[in-house]
Image (tube, rainbow, N blue to C red; front, top):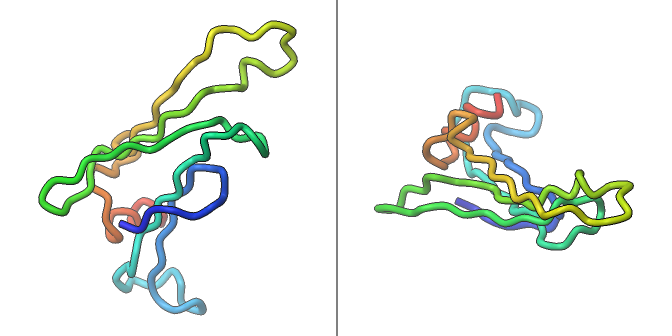
Length: 105
């Protein structure tokens, strides 16, 4: 697992094949997980990522974020609403280049 980057938003990426042949059937080289920022700048809902590692296998990946959409245009701030997005909901039970490639294509 490669974890990081600086985009302010949660993101999933993988690379396989050559740039001119990106959607080929080759093996995925890596899977990148970009964690959401904890600051609300750039329209981002602040968040963080959690996951388990057992015997070198990454699983149970979840983004947890503070949903600020219900605060837009309000004069008083409602109670914060934390939401979770589990990667299992998208068929990603384990995190590795192959499963991420299958998810993306």
